[in-house]
Length: 66
Image 1 (cartoon, rainbow, N blue to C red):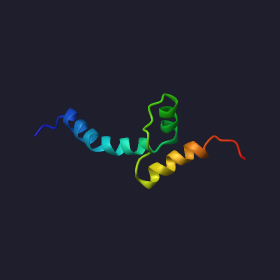
Image 2: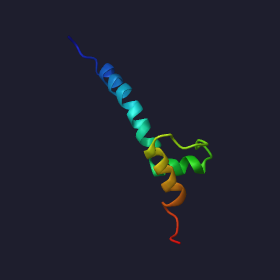
Image 3: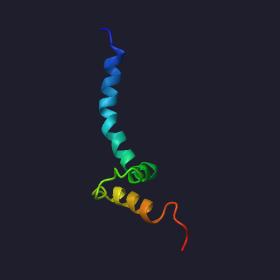
Image 4: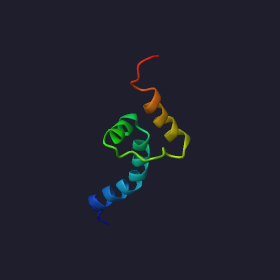
């Protein structure tokens, strides 16, 4: 049996793609870039980690101390 490397890579990326997208959605840098280019969603993701990441960007990360 000959294993085609392209098929292996395609299978791996098909599995990893949703996982990577989920991690990127909660990254502060990605959120800032989306906001900068007006591409961010109207509402943050419904899960706790998504809401937390958006709250950090909006109210904490890179903001001056009161």
